[in-house]
View 1 (tube, rainbow, N blue to C red):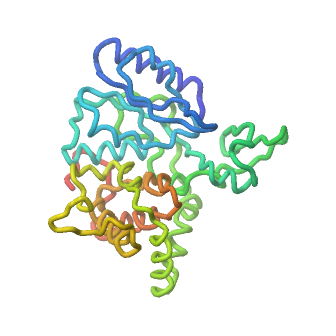
View 2: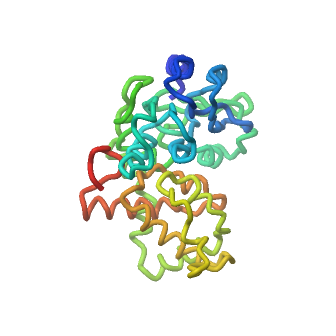
Length: 308
């Protein structure tokens, strides 16, 4: 997805929007301090736009900042991010006239943990990762290894239904193709394996997973659909959960959160990506996403004029 023409267009458009006073802030990506990473860039300075990047590592769903940054905002949005923006519009959390969406057609984001596992090296030992269509070339100690993109993309990217934003003001590149049936199957592989377990074994699986949870709330904090000013876990009258991260309370937190974001979750995968202990949270959120679709024929973030 790295496209210098698209990156230069982004920088030019963002700078012009700030110079012309059409926006007060730009929210995008800049290179991170760690190898092969990016980090959110939020700025009012037109000169900072030269730091904006578009590459296969722009993982964050930046729409989470829209309820925090006040004023007119320009935001870089991939397909799943734009769906989150639409969902926020439907919930009246943001006003459409206050947001300029710079749409990025996205062919998928590379999951560095998958790359590390496949090549058997830490990312610091990897010299280069290059995406060329369906090929991803990994360079280690001068040797190049070629992988298919489907082997190293995030699971949610494999089944992405809208790689090109439907809601945008400026589209920065050519539309990307939606996921194939094979990609969708790969995206659901982990989820389907859990569904296939006997209930007792599935219960033991989640009990074991949530026994590892440290209740850091990273999943909640990165989720654009979690916008309550005060979360139920912080209430003391009544007290819903104990402060100590017991597996029972951790499970209750995730169950309630999952129900709360039902009909708002766009399957962006941020909750699972942000989890520091690698709990497969998308297996829960995508499960609820599919239930909402099956019962109500509704997918979040598709049409800002559609009532929830």
